[in-house]
View 1 (cartoon, one colour):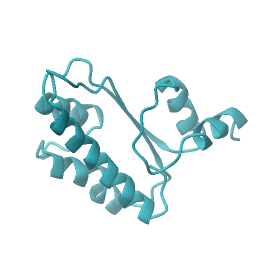
View 2 (cartoon, rainbow, N blue to C red; view 1 turned 180 degrees about the vertical axis):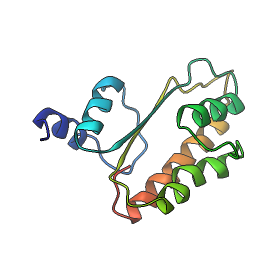
View 3 (cartoon, rainbow, N blue to C red; view 1 turned 180 degrees about the horizontal axis):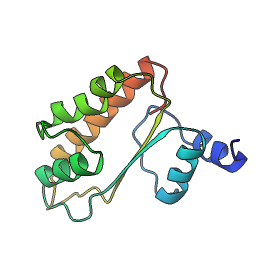
Length: 131
């Protein structure tokens, strides 16, 4: 049985888009995702000091395989094609908390990382899967 507030929370967030979610608490998003059967992927990047740190933390927290190449192409592959090939997917809620910027991660690297997630959102949108 779905909790009405869980459905309403995720309905207020447009699917298949990368956006800031400062108005939402990760715990509430996790609860809502689980209540409607979506995967919930969460990472806290507060300790990351570089783009490589970000990729390392994401790989660990999202349980990527040991052969993960730790680059943006490999990131994209792990959150799209590999998962798609494993079978039908219900949907995803992905939270990157405290994504570094400024001196710890330059703007271009940050945008490239977010572009990998935007491309993944497009991938899943084409398959009618919320991401």
